[in-house]
Amino acid sequence: MIAVLFVDDTSELMALARTVLEKSGEIRLDIARSTKQALEKVKNRTYDVIVCFEQVPDVNGIEFVSDMNGIEFLKYIKSQGNSTPFIVISRRSQNKVVIAEVFNGTEFPLPKTGDSRSQLTDLVMMVKQSMLRRKAEREIKAQNDQLTAILSATPLGIFQMRNHVLEWVNHPFAVMLGYDDNQLAGKEIRILFRNPEEYEQVLRDLQMKRDARGTELAECDLVRTDKILVPCQIQAQVLDTRDVAKGGTFVVTNITERKRLADALKESEAKYREMMQNTQSIIIRIDTQGAITFFNTYALSFFDFTAEEVIGKNVVGTIIPSKTRAGHDLSMMANDLGFNAEGYAINVMENARRSGDRVWIAWINKAIRDEQGHIIEILCIGNDITDRHRVSGEVRISTDTWKDQVVADTDVRENVFDSVFHICTEISIEGREGKSVGTTFLIGDAMNVLSKSRQIMLNAFEGHQPELRMVTNPDLKENIKEFAQLDGAFIVTGDGFIEASGRYITVDTSCVNLPKGMGTRHNSVAAITDVTKAVGIVVSQSGGGITIFKNGQILKKISL
Image (cartoon, rainbow, N blue to C red; front, side):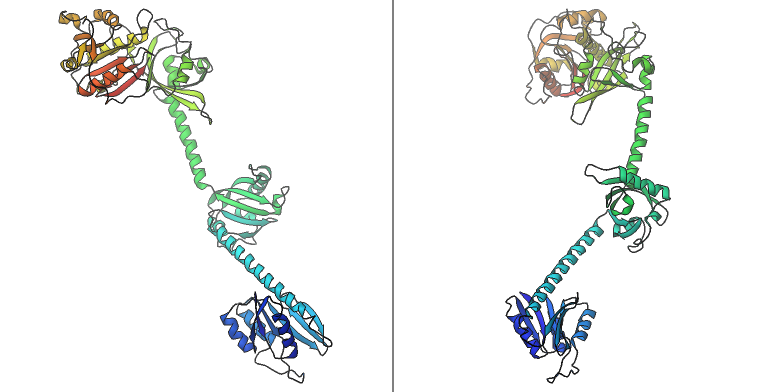
Protein backbone atom coordinates (compact mmCIF):
# COMPACT_ATOMS: atom_id res chain seq x y z
CA MET A 1 0.00 0.00 0.00
CA ILE A 2 1.10 3.56 -0.81
CA ALA A 3 0.85 5.89 2.20
CA VAL A 4 -0.48 9.29 1.05
CA LEU A 5 -1.03 12.41 3.15
CA PHE A 6 -4.03 14.17 1.57
CA VAL A 7 -4.46 17.84 2.56
CA ASP A 8 -8.16 18.61 1.92
CA ASP A 9 -9.51 22.16 1.41
CA THR A 10 -13.13 20.85 1.46
CA SER A 11 -13.64 21.98 -2.15
CA GLU A 12 -15.58 19.93 -4.68
CA LEU A 13 -12.43 19.32 -6.72
CA MET A 14 -10.44 17.98 -3.74
CA ALA A 15 -13.39 15.81 -2.68
CA LEU A 16 -13.49 14.30 -6.17
CA ALA A 17 -9.72 13.69 -6.13
CA ARG A 18 -10.01 12.08 -2.71
CA THR A 19 -12.71 9.71 -3.96
CA VAL A 20 -10.60 8.63 -6.96
CA LEU A 21 -7.57 7.91 -4.79
CA GLU A 22 -9.58 5.96 -2.21
CA LYS A 23 -11.15 3.74 -4.87
CA SER A 24 -7.82 2.85 -6.52
CA GLY A 25 -7.34 0.00 -4.01
CA GLU A 26 -3.57 0.57 -3.77
CA ILE A 27 -3.49 3.83 -1.81
CA ARG A 28 -4.06 4.42 1.90
CA LEU A 29 -5.09 8.05 2.59
CA ASP A 30 -4.37 9.98 5.75
CA ILE A 31 -6.61 13.09 5.68
CA ALA A 32 -5.47 16.50 6.97
CA ARG A 33 -8.12 19.27 7.11
CA SER A 34 -5.55 22.06 6.94
CA THR A 35 -1.86 22.61 6.26
CA LYS A 36 -1.37 23.23 9.98
CA GLN A 37 -2.79 19.79 10.77
CA ALA A 38 -0.70 18.32 7.91
CA LEU A 39 2.45 19.70 9.54
CA GLU A 40 1.70 17.84 12.76
CA LYS A 41 1.16 14.59 10.85
CA VAL A 42 4.41 14.97 8.88
CA LYS A 43 6.34 15.38 12.15
CA ASN A 44 5.11 12.03 13.46
CA ARG A 45 4.93 9.86 10.37
CA THR A 46 6.68 9.17 7.07
CA TYR A 47 4.61 9.23 3.88
CA ASP A 48 5.32 8.01 0.37
CA VAL A 49 3.55 10.97 -1.29
CA ILE A 50 1.86 14.23 -0.18
CA VAL A 51 -1.13 15.57 -2.17
CA CYS A 52 -2.12 19.18 -1.41
CA PHE A 53 -4.06 22.11 -2.83
CA GLU A 54 -2.24 25.21 -4.00
CA GLN A 55 -4.59 27.89 -2.58
CA VAL A 56 -7.89 27.81 -0.66
CA PRO A 57 -10.91 29.61 -2.28
CA ASP A 58 -14.17 30.57 -0.53
CA VAL A 59 -17.48 29.16 -1.61
CA ASN A 60 -18.05 31.96 -4.10
CA GLY A 61 -14.75 31.25 -5.90
CA ILE A 62 -12.96 34.15 -4.29
CA GLU A 63 -9.56 33.18 -2.84
CA PHE A 64 -8.78 34.01 0.79
CA VAL A 65 -5.76 33.66 3.04
CA SER A 66 -5.53 30.42 5.03
CA ASP A 67 -3.06 29.52 7.81
CA MET A 68 -0.63 28.37 5.07
CA ASN A 69 -1.23 27.62 1.40
CA GLY A 70 0.11 24.57 -0.41
CA ILE A 71 3.21 26.26 -1.83
CA GLU A 72 4.19 27.65 1.57
CA PHE A 73 3.58 24.22 3.09
CA LEU A 74 5.85 22.63 0.44
CA LYS A 75 8.63 25.18 1.05
CA TYR A 76 8.47 24.64 4.77
CA ILE A 77 8.73 20.85 4.78
CA LYS A 78 11.54 21.01 2.22
CA SER A 79 13.39 23.44 4.49
CA GLN A 80 13.17 20.80 7.23
CA GLY A 81 14.95 18.25 5.02
CA ASN A 82 11.82 16.27 4.13
CA SER A 83 12.18 14.95 0.55
CA THR A 84 8.75 13.31 0.24
CA PRO A 85 7.32 13.61 -3.32
CA PHE A 86 4.76 16.44 -3.45
CA ILE A 87 1.76 16.74 -5.81
CA VAL A 88 -0.03 20.07 -6.02
CA ILE A 89 -3.57 20.54 -7.37
CA SER A 90 -3.87 24.11 -8.73
CA ARG A 91 -6.65 26.26 -10.17
CA ARG A 92 -5.17 28.31 -13.02
CA SER A 93 -8.41 29.87 -14.23
CA GLN A 94 -12.13 29.36 -14.17
CA ASN A 95 -11.78 26.78 -16.94
CA LYS A 96 -8.46 25.09 -16.07
CA VAL A 97 -7.24 22.95 -13.17
CA VAL A 98 -3.67 21.59 -13.12
CA ILE A 99 -2.17 18.68 -11.16
CA ALA A 100 1.60 19.28 -10.89
CA GLU A 101 4.25 16.84 -9.62
CA VAL A 102 6.63 19.28 -8.06
CA PHE A 103 9.88 17.42 -8.75
CA ASN A 104 9.60 17.26 -12.53
CA GLY A 105 6.87 19.80 -13.30
CA THR A 106 4.49 17.34 -14.93
CA GLU A 107 1.02 18.86 -15.53
CA PHE A 108 -2.37 17.32 -16.37
CA PRO A 109 -4.87 20.02 -17.47
CA LEU A 110 -8.46 19.25 -16.44
CA PRO A 111 -11.36 21.17 -18.09
CA LYS A 112 -13.84 22.65 -15.63
CA THR A 113 -16.85 21.53 -17.61
CA GLY A 114 -17.82 17.91 -17.98
CA ASP A 115 -16.94 14.90 -15.82
CA SER A 116 -13.40 15.24 -14.39
CA ARG A 117 -13.48 11.80 -12.74
CA SER A 118 -11.79 10.03 -15.68
CA GLN A 119 -9.10 12.70 -15.95
CA LEU A 120 -8.38 12.43 -12.22
CA THR A 121 -7.33 8.81 -12.70
CA ASP A 122 -4.04 10.31 -13.95
CA LEU A 123 -3.58 11.49 -10.37
CA VAL A 124 -3.42 7.85 -9.24
CA MET A 125 -0.70 7.11 -11.80
CA MET A 126 1.22 10.18 -10.73
CA VAL A 127 1.06 9.11 -7.06
CA LYS A 128 2.41 5.67 -7.98
CA GLN A 129 5.21 7.08 -10.09
CA SER A 130 6.17 9.54 -7.38
CA MET A 131 6.26 6.79 -4.79
CA LEU A 132 8.34 4.47 -7.03
CA ARG A 133 10.80 7.23 -7.82
CA ARG A 134 11.06 8.07 -4.15
CA LYS A 135 11.75 4.38 -3.37
CA ALA A 136 14.35 4.18 -6.11
CA GLU A 137 16.03 7.33 -4.82
CA ARG A 138 16.18 5.89 -1.31
CA GLU A 139 17.69 2.65 -2.62
CA ILE A 140 20.25 4.50 -4.71
CA LYS A 141 21.15 6.71 -1.75
CA ALA A 142 21.53 3.65 0.50
CA GLN A 143 23.73 1.96 -2.10
CA ASN A 144 25.80 5.12 -2.50
CA ASP A 145 26.16 5.46 1.26
CA GLN A 146 27.21 1.82 1.53
CA LEU A 147 29.68 2.18 -1.35
CA THR A 148 31.10 5.36 0.18
CA ALA A 149 31.52 3.58 3.52
CA ILE A 150 33.29 0.67 1.84
CA LEU A 151 35.56 2.92 -0.19
CA SER A 152 36.41 4.91 2.92
CA ALA A 153 37.09 1.81 5.02
CA THR A 154 39.37 0.09 2.52
CA PRO A 155 43.10 0.67 3.04
CA LEU A 156 43.43 1.16 -0.72
CA GLY A 157 43.44 4.65 -2.17
CA ILE A 158 40.87 5.21 -4.91
CA PHE A 159 40.33 8.18 -7.19
CA GLN A 160 38.45 9.04 -10.36
CA MET A 161 40.13 11.14 -13.00
CA ARG A 162 38.92 12.69 -16.24
CA ASN A 163 41.07 14.63 -18.70
CA HIS A 164 43.95 14.94 -16.19
CA VAL A 165 41.63 16.31 -13.47
CA LEU A 166 40.78 14.54 -10.19
CA GLU A 167 36.98 14.34 -9.95
CA TRP A 168 36.75 12.34 -6.68
CA VAL A 169 39.10 10.73 -4.15
CA ASN A 170 38.35 8.48 -1.19
CA HIS A 171 39.52 9.21 2.35
CA PRO A 172 42.45 6.70 2.43
CA PHE A 173 43.93 8.18 -0.75
CA ALA A 174 43.79 11.71 0.65
CA VAL A 175 45.33 10.56 3.95
CA MET A 176 48.03 8.59 2.11
CA LEU A 177 49.27 11.83 0.55
CA GLY A 178 48.60 14.10 3.54
CA TYR A 179 45.52 15.95 2.18
CA ASP A 180 42.07 16.61 3.57
CA ASP A 181 39.22 14.83 1.78
CA ASN A 182 38.06 17.93 -0.11
CA GLN A 183 41.47 19.31 -1.10
CA LEU A 184 42.14 17.17 -4.17
CA ALA A 185 38.83 17.13 -6.07
CA GLY A 186 39.08 19.46 -9.05
CA LYS A 187 42.90 19.61 -8.98
CA GLU A 188 45.23 18.62 -11.82
CA ILE A 189 46.56 15.11 -11.13
CA ARG A 190 50.02 16.27 -12.22
CA ILE A 191 50.51 17.91 -8.80
CA LEU A 192 50.92 14.43 -7.31
CA PHE A 193 54.07 13.72 -9.37
CA ARG A 194 57.59 15.12 -9.14
CA ASN A 195 57.58 16.27 -12.74
CA PRO A 196 55.47 15.99 -15.92
CA GLU A 197 57.82 13.37 -17.35
CA GLU A 198 57.04 10.90 -14.54
CA TYR A 199 53.30 11.45 -14.99
CA GLU A 200 53.56 10.82 -18.73
CA GLN A 201 55.56 7.66 -18.03
CA VAL A 202 52.80 6.35 -15.75
CA LEU A 203 50.22 6.97 -18.47
CA ARG A 204 52.36 5.00 -20.92
CA ASP A 205 52.83 2.16 -18.43
CA LEU A 206 49.09 1.96 -17.78
CA GLN A 207 48.49 1.78 -21.50
CA MET A 208 51.10 -0.95 -22.07
CA LYS A 209 51.06 -3.18 -18.95
CA ARG A 210 48.10 -5.35 -17.99
CA ASP A 211 47.59 -8.22 -15.56
CA ALA A 212 45.81 -11.51 -16.35
CA ARG A 213 42.39 -9.87 -15.83
CA GLY A 214 43.13 -7.04 -18.26
CA THR A 215 43.61 -4.42 -15.54
CA GLU A 216 46.17 -1.75 -16.37
CA LEU A 217 49.15 -1.63 -13.98
CA ALA A 218 51.92 0.84 -13.20
CA GLU A 219 54.34 1.61 -10.38
CA CYS A 220 55.42 5.11 -9.48
CA ASP A 221 56.27 7.52 -6.65
CA LEU A 222 53.55 9.96 -5.58
CA VAL A 223 54.44 13.17 -3.73
CA ARG A 224 52.99 13.86 -0.28
CA THR A 225 52.22 17.38 0.89
CA ASP A 226 55.45 17.24 2.96
CA LYS A 227 57.40 16.31 -0.23
CA ILE A 228 58.04 12.74 0.94
CA LEU A 229 57.78 10.20 -1.89
CA VAL A 230 55.31 7.34 -1.49
CA PRO A 231 56.03 4.24 -3.64
CA CYS A 232 52.69 3.12 -5.11
CA GLN A 233 51.18 0.59 -7.46
CA ILE A 234 48.30 1.88 -9.59
CA GLN A 235 45.58 -0.34 -11.08
CA ALA A 236 43.18 1.27 -13.52
CA GLN A 237 39.87 0.67 -15.23
CA VAL A 238 40.04 3.31 -17.94
CA LEU A 239 37.35 4.80 -20.15
CA ASP A 240 39.47 4.45 -23.29
CA THR A 241 42.37 1.98 -23.45
CA ARG A 242 43.85 3.99 -26.33
CA ASP A 243 44.03 7.16 -24.23
CA VAL A 244 44.37 6.68 -20.48
CA ALA A 245 44.29 10.45 -19.92
CA LYS A 246 40.58 10.50 -20.78
CA GLY A 247 40.04 9.07 -17.33
CA GLY A 248 38.62 6.21 -15.36
CA THR A 249 38.78 4.69 -11.88
CA PHE A 250 42.22 4.16 -10.32
CA VAL A 251 43.12 2.03 -7.30
CA VAL A 252 46.34 2.97 -5.50
CA THR A 253 48.27 0.61 -3.18
CA ASN A 254 51.00 1.93 -0.91
CA ILE A 255 53.92 -0.44 -1.57
CA THR A 256 56.43 1.26 0.72
CA GLU A 257 56.80 -1.87 2.88
CA ARG A 258 57.01 -4.13 -0.15
CA LYS A 259 59.74 -1.94 -1.66
CA ARG A 260 61.58 -1.93 1.66
CA LEU A 261 61.43 -5.73 1.82
CA ALA A 262 62.51 -6.01 -1.82
CA ASP A 263 65.48 -3.71 -1.18
CA ALA A 264 66.33 -5.67 1.97
CA LEU A 265 66.09 -8.91 -0.02
CA LYS A 266 68.43 -7.52 -2.68
CA GLU A 267 70.89 -6.49 0.01
CA SER A 268 70.54 -9.90 1.65
CA GLU A 269 71.09 -11.65 -1.67
CA ALA A 270 74.19 -9.55 -2.27
CA LYS A 271 75.54 -10.47 1.17
CA TYR A 272 74.60 -14.10 0.53
CA ARG A 273 76.50 -14.11 -2.76
CA GLU A 274 79.47 -12.50 -1.05
CA MET A 275 79.30 -15.07 1.75
CA MET A 276 79.01 -17.91 -0.76
CA GLN A 277 82.10 -16.65 -2.55
CA ASN A 278 84.24 -15.86 0.48
CA THR A 279 83.23 -18.41 3.12
CA GLN A 280 85.86 -20.91 4.26
CA SER A 281 83.64 -23.79 3.16
CA ILE A 282 83.52 -25.48 -0.21
CA ILE A 283 80.22 -24.57 -1.89
CA ILE A 284 79.25 -25.94 -5.27
CA ARG A 285 76.04 -26.48 -7.20
CA ILE A 286 75.50 -29.24 -9.72
CA ASP A 287 72.59 -30.12 -11.98
CA THR A 288 70.92 -33.52 -11.99
CA GLN A 289 73.44 -34.79 -14.56
CA GLY A 290 76.39 -33.82 -12.34
CA ALA A 291 77.44 -30.74 -14.33
CA ILE A 292 78.94 -27.99 -12.14
CA THR A 293 76.90 -24.74 -12.25
CA PHE A 294 78.56 -22.86 -9.36
CA PHE A 295 81.97 -23.03 -7.67
CA ASN A 296 82.70 -20.53 -4.90
CA THR A 297 86.04 -18.77 -4.47
CA TYR A 298 87.20 -21.01 -1.64
CA ALA A 299 86.38 -24.14 -3.68
CA LEU A 300 88.42 -22.84 -6.63
CA SER A 301 91.36 -22.16 -4.32
CA PHE A 302 91.04 -25.47 -2.46
CA PHE A 303 90.89 -27.65 -5.57
CA ASP A 304 93.28 -25.36 -7.53
CA PHE A 305 91.00 -24.72 -10.51
CA THR A 306 89.84 -21.62 -12.37
CA ALA A 307 86.12 -21.02 -12.91
CA GLU A 308 86.49 -21.65 -16.65
CA GLU A 309 88.02 -25.06 -15.95
CA VAL A 310 85.11 -26.36 -13.82
CA ILE A 311 81.85 -24.53 -14.73
CA GLY A 312 79.86 -26.79 -17.02
CA LYS A 313 82.14 -29.78 -16.39
CA ASN A 314 80.98 -32.96 -14.63
CA VAL A 315 82.04 -33.45 -11.01
CA VAL A 316 83.25 -36.94 -11.88
CA GLY A 317 86.64 -36.47 -13.46
CA THR A 318 87.20 -33.05 -11.89
CA ILE A 319 86.89 -33.12 -8.09
CA ILE A 320 85.64 -36.72 -7.88
CA PRO A 321 88.11 -39.28 -9.22
CA SER A 322 86.68 -41.68 -11.77
CA LYS A 323 88.15 -44.54 -9.75
CA THR A 324 88.75 -44.72 -6.01
CA ARG A 325 91.97 -46.14 -4.63
CA ALA A 326 90.06 -49.33 -3.93
CA GLY A 327 89.02 -49.47 -7.58
CA HIS A 328 85.29 -48.73 -7.13
CA ASP A 329 83.65 -47.07 -10.15
CA LEU A 330 82.26 -43.62 -9.24
CA SER A 331 80.81 -42.73 -12.64
CA MET A 332 77.27 -42.84 -11.20
CA MET A 333 78.15 -40.56 -8.27
CA ALA A 334 76.29 -37.55 -9.74
CA ASN A 335 73.06 -39.50 -10.03
CA ASP A 336 73.56 -40.85 -6.50
CA LEU A 337 73.99 -37.31 -5.19
CA GLY A 338 70.70 -36.31 -6.78
CA PHE A 339 68.94 -39.36 -5.38
CA ASN A 340 70.30 -38.89 -1.87
CA ALA A 341 70.20 -35.08 -1.85
CA GLU A 342 68.30 -35.02 1.42
CA GLY A 343 69.06 -38.47 2.71
CA TYR A 344 72.18 -38.01 4.84
CA ALA A 345 73.26 -35.66 7.61
CA ILE A 346 76.86 -35.96 6.36
CA ASN A 347 78.17 -37.56 3.18
CA VAL A 348 81.92 -38.15 3.50
CA MET A 349 83.68 -38.61 0.19
CA GLU A 350 87.21 -39.02 -1.09
CA ASN A 351 87.84 -36.17 -3.52
CA ALA A 352 90.79 -35.18 -5.67
CA ARG A 353 92.56 -31.88 -6.18
CA ARG A 354 93.85 -30.79 -9.56
CA SER A 355 97.30 -32.09 -8.59
CA GLY A 356 95.85 -35.55 -7.94
CA ASP A 357 96.18 -35.31 -4.15
CA ARG A 358 93.36 -37.18 -2.39
CA VAL A 359 91.34 -35.39 0.31
CA TRP A 360 88.39 -36.33 2.49
CA ILE A 361 85.44 -33.91 2.34
CA ALA A 362 82.34 -34.03 4.54
CA TRP A 363 79.47 -32.91 2.31
CA ILE A 364 76.00 -31.76 3.25
CA ASN A 365 73.74 -31.99 0.20
CA LYS A 366 70.50 -30.06 -0.26
CA ALA A 367 68.06 -30.52 -3.13
CA ILE A 368 66.91 -27.42 -5.00
CA ARG A 369 63.43 -28.05 -6.40
CA ASP A 370 61.17 -26.33 -8.92
CA GLU A 371 57.54 -25.33 -8.25
CA GLN A 372 56.39 -28.88 -9.06
CA GLY A 373 58.78 -30.37 -6.49
CA HIS A 374 61.21 -31.84 -9.02
CA ILE A 375 64.93 -31.69 -8.20
CA ILE A 376 66.68 -29.33 -10.62
CA GLU A 377 69.99 -28.79 -8.82
CA ILE A 378 71.98 -29.98 -5.81
CA LEU A 379 73.61 -27.54 -3.39
CA CYS A 380 76.70 -29.18 -1.86
CA ILE A 381 78.49 -27.63 1.12
CA GLY A 382 81.75 -29.33 2.01
CA ASN A 383 84.39 -29.12 4.73
CA ASP A 384 87.84 -30.60 4.51
CA ILE A 385 88.20 -33.31 7.16
CA THR A 386 91.46 -34.77 5.93
CA ASP A 387 93.80 -35.90 8.72
CA ARG A 388 97.24 -34.52 7.75
CA HIS A 389 98.98 -34.97 11.11
CA ARG A 390 100.04 -38.59 10.67
CA VAL A 391 103.76 -39.25 10.36
CA SER A 392 103.14 -42.10 7.92
CA GLY A 393 101.67 -39.71 5.39
CA GLU A 394 98.51 -41.78 5.08
CA VAL A 395 95.50 -39.62 4.13
CA ARG A 396 92.42 -40.40 6.16
CA ILE A 397 89.32 -38.76 7.71
CA SER A 398 89.93 -36.40 10.62
CA THR A 399 87.69 -36.65 13.68
CA ASP A 400 89.21 -33.63 15.42
CA THR A 401 86.13 -31.42 15.20
CA TRP A 402 83.64 -33.87 16.66
CA LYS A 403 85.24 -36.79 18.52
CA ASP A 404 85.12 -34.86 21.83
CA GLN A 405 81.35 -35.12 21.66
CA VAL A 406 81.60 -38.88 21.19
CA VAL A 407 83.98 -39.77 24.01
CA ALA A 408 82.65 -37.28 26.60
CA ASP A 409 81.38 -38.97 29.82
CA THR A 410 82.79 -42.36 28.77
CA ASP A 411 86.02 -44.25 29.52
CA VAL A 412 86.92 -44.25 25.81
CA ARG A 413 90.27 -42.69 24.94
CA GLU A 414 90.42 -40.41 21.88
CA ASN A 415 93.17 -42.42 20.15
CA VAL A 416 91.19 -45.63 20.69
CA PHE A 417 88.06 -44.16 19.10
CA ASP A 418 90.15 -42.80 16.19
CA SER A 419 91.67 -46.23 15.53
CA VAL A 420 88.31 -48.03 15.56
CA PHE A 421 86.65 -45.36 13.43
CA HIS A 422 89.33 -45.47 10.75
CA ILE A 423 89.21 -49.26 10.64
CA CYS A 424 85.44 -48.87 10.07
CA THR A 425 85.98 -46.37 7.22
CA GLU A 426 88.39 -48.77 5.52
CA ILE A 427 85.94 -51.66 5.89
CA SER A 428 83.17 -49.44 4.49
CA ILE A 429 85.21 -48.28 1.51
CA GLU A 430 87.17 -51.42 0.67
CA GLY A 431 84.97 -54.28 1.87
CA ARG A 432 86.74 -57.63 1.74
CA GLU A 433 87.66 -59.59 -1.35
CA GLY A 434 85.37 -57.46 -3.50
CA LYS A 435 82.33 -57.86 -1.26
CA SER A 436 80.59 -55.41 1.05
CA VAL A 437 81.09 -56.05 4.74
CA GLY A 438 78.92 -55.05 7.68
CA THR A 439 80.14 -55.14 11.26
CA THR A 440 79.78 -53.67 14.76
CA PHE A 441 82.18 -52.27 17.35
CA LEU A 442 81.24 -51.51 20.98
CA ILE A 443 83.90 -49.36 22.71
CA GLY A 444 84.11 -48.71 26.45
CA ASP A 445 82.31 -50.01 29.58
CA ALA A 446 83.49 -53.42 28.40
CA MET A 447 82.54 -55.53 31.46
CA ASN A 448 78.99 -54.19 31.42
CA VAL A 449 78.69 -54.81 27.67
CA LEU A 450 80.03 -58.39 28.05
CA SER A 451 77.40 -59.09 30.70
CA LYS A 452 74.64 -58.04 28.27
CA SER A 453 75.88 -60.14 25.36
CA ARG A 454 76.91 -63.75 24.68
CA GLN A 455 79.39 -65.53 22.45
CA ILE A 456 77.91 -66.98 19.25
CA MET A 457 81.17 -68.25 17.75
CA LEU A 458 84.81 -68.71 18.67
CA ASN A 459 86.35 -65.59 20.21
CA ALA A 460 89.39 -65.01 17.97
CA PHE A 461 91.10 -62.81 20.57
CA GLU A 462 90.66 -64.97 23.65
CA GLY A 463 93.90 -66.07 25.38
CA HIS A 464 96.21 -63.73 23.45
CA GLN A 465 98.68 -61.42 25.16
CA PRO A 466 97.28 -57.91 25.89
CA GLU A 467 99.79 -56.21 23.59
CA LEU A 468 98.59 -58.44 20.75
CA ARG A 469 94.97 -57.35 21.32
CA MET A 470 95.51 -53.55 21.14
CA VAL A 471 93.20 -52.02 18.53
CA THR A 472 95.72 -49.20 18.08
CA ASN A 473 98.33 -51.68 16.87
CA PRO A 474 98.66 -51.18 13.07
CA ASP A 475 99.75 -54.79 12.62
CA LEU A 476 96.38 -56.00 13.95
CA LYS A 477 94.26 -54.02 11.46
CA GLU A 478 94.14 -56.64 8.71
CA ASN A 479 93.16 -59.37 11.19
CA ILE A 480 90.29 -57.21 12.45
CA LYS A 481 89.08 -56.64 8.87
CA GLU A 482 89.18 -60.37 8.27
CA PHE A 483 87.16 -61.21 11.39
CA ALA A 484 84.68 -58.40 10.54
CA GLN A 485 83.23 -60.70 7.88
CA LEU A 486 81.93 -62.99 10.62
CA ASP A 487 78.73 -62.44 12.58
CA GLY A 488 78.71 -60.67 15.91
CA ALA A 489 80.22 -57.56 17.46
CA PHE A 490 83.73 -56.60 18.55
CA ILE A 491 83.97 -55.60 22.23
CA VAL A 492 86.79 -53.06 22.86
CA THR A 493 87.77 -51.59 26.24
CA GLY A 494 88.05 -47.84 26.65
CA ASP A 495 91.85 -48.11 26.68
CA GLY A 496 91.97 -50.16 23.47
CA PHE A 497 92.05 -53.90 24.31
CA ILE A 498 89.86 -56.12 22.12
CA GLU A 499 88.08 -58.33 24.65
CA ALA A 500 86.02 -60.34 22.18
CA SER A 501 84.68 -60.78 18.69
CA GLY A 502 81.57 -62.64 17.55
CA ARG A 503 79.37 -61.38 20.44
CA TYR A 504 75.56 -61.42 20.20
CA ILE A 505 73.77 -58.56 21.97
CA THR A 506 70.99 -59.77 24.27
CA VAL A 507 69.45 -56.43 25.28
CA ASP A 508 65.72 -55.87 24.64
CA THR A 509 65.32 -53.55 21.61
CA SER A 510 61.60 -52.80 22.01
CA CYS A 511 62.27 -49.37 23.50
CA VAL A 512 64.46 -48.30 20.56
CA ASN A 513 62.99 -45.89 18.03
CA LEU A 514 65.23 -45.52 14.99
CA PRO A 515 64.49 -44.17 11.49
CA LYS A 516 63.08 -46.55 8.92
CA GLY A 517 65.61 -48.54 6.94
CA MET A 518 67.84 -49.48 9.87
CA GLY A 519 68.08 -53.20 10.57
CA THR A 520 68.68 -55.53 13.51
CA ARG A 521 72.34 -54.60 13.92
CA HIS A 522 71.52 -50.89 14.35
CA ASN A 523 68.63 -51.53 16.75
CA SER A 524 70.75 -53.84 18.94
CA VAL A 525 73.62 -51.32 19.18
CA ALA A 526 71.21 -48.46 19.98
CA ALA A 527 69.67 -50.59 22.74
CA ILE A 528 72.93 -51.61 24.42
CA THR A 529 74.37 -48.05 24.34
CA ASP A 530 71.16 -46.96 26.06
CA VAL A 531 71.83 -49.21 29.09
CA THR A 532 75.65 -48.96 29.16
CA LYS A 533 78.31 -46.25 28.78
CA ALA A 534 79.59 -47.80 25.57
CA VAL A 535 80.00 -46.05 22.21
CA GLY A 536 78.73 -48.09 19.26
CA ILE A 537 79.88 -47.95 15.62
CA VAL A 538 77.96 -49.86 12.95
CA VAL A 539 79.15 -50.36 9.38
CA SER A 540 76.18 -51.12 7.17
CA GLN A 541 76.67 -53.93 4.67
CA SER A 542 74.12 -52.34 2.34
CA GLY A 543 75.53 -48.98 1.28
CA GLY A 544 78.57 -48.91 3.55
CA GLY A 545 77.22 -46.14 5.78
CA ILE A 546 78.79 -45.63 9.21
CA THR A 547 76.49 -44.85 12.15
CA ILE A 548 77.81 -43.82 15.57
CA PHE A 549 75.58 -44.45 18.61
CA LYS A 550 75.69 -43.10 22.16
CA ASN A 551 73.08 -43.14 24.93
CA GLY A 552 70.68 -45.03 22.68
CA GLN A 553 70.70 -42.28 20.04
CA ILE A 554 72.31 -41.76 16.64
CA LEU A 555 75.15 -39.32 17.27
CA LYS A 556 76.45 -39.14 13.69
CA LYS A 557 75.64 -40.79 10.40
CA ILE A 558 78.27 -40.80 7.68
CA SER A 559 77.88 -42.06 4.14
CA LEU A 560 81.12 -42.93 2.36
